[in-house]
Image 1 (cartoon, rainbow, N blue to C red):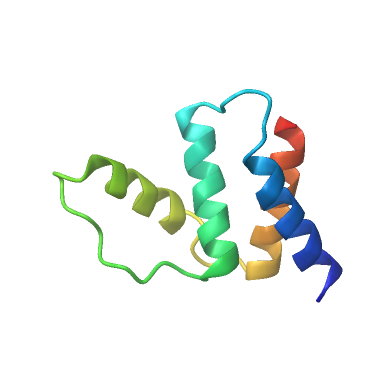
Image 2: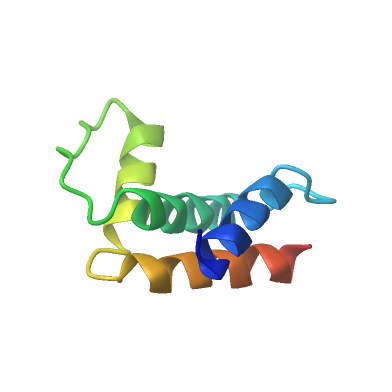
Amino acid sequence: MSDLKTRFETAVANSKNLSERPDNSTLLKIYGLYKQSTTGDNTDKKPGFGDMVGRAKWDAWNQCKGTEQDAAMQQYIDLIESLS
């Protein structure tokens, strides 16, 4: 397993143990980078207006579109480290 992948998995584990809960926009950024890192570009259908949480998550992931998975992993690691 690559060093980046190991550091990413450590950051994912650390994200569950942050000293304080990040604000919603930061949580969405974390979600978007995680999805981009693990799945790649968003190809899912955008949720309807009735699903505001799903829509916000979809938008956060879609903002990462075009980012290489390794780059998204590094951004995720950097963001979690800045919050720790």
